[in-house]
Image (cartoon, rainbow, N blue to C red; front, top):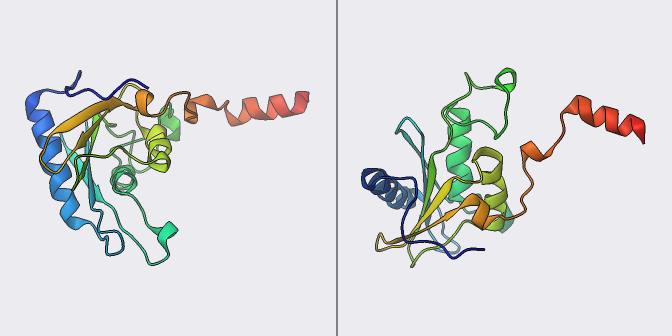
Length: 172
């Protein structure tokens, strides 16, 4: 994996500032009484709108949900994001949505990248060249593409269509 960069290849300063502000603010909505590790996430959509999320822990630890997945789930439900490679006829929730231009993640420490489960979840909805901006408590950041964080990934565009899969199975 290439080392994270300290600059964005696709975002302008106002967009980075918007992601920074919303990611850091989203941390304040974190429910993390067990780890005290607050995480906020913000999705920047191509139309300039933002969708946020925060981590929500649970006494049964595996039941908790990460900030990145909260933000993406909200964006899908709001019709702002669709799966990578989705066809127009597959669109749900009021249309194709606007997608993910970049994803910001903020923590109380020097910065952290999305966990493995979140990387795979992000893969479903963000292009591999999409940038993930990882903000530390001081607002400084590192940048990596999804491809850099999840090389040799498996996503919806890796699957044949349902009809193609039936043909493959019939030939076996």
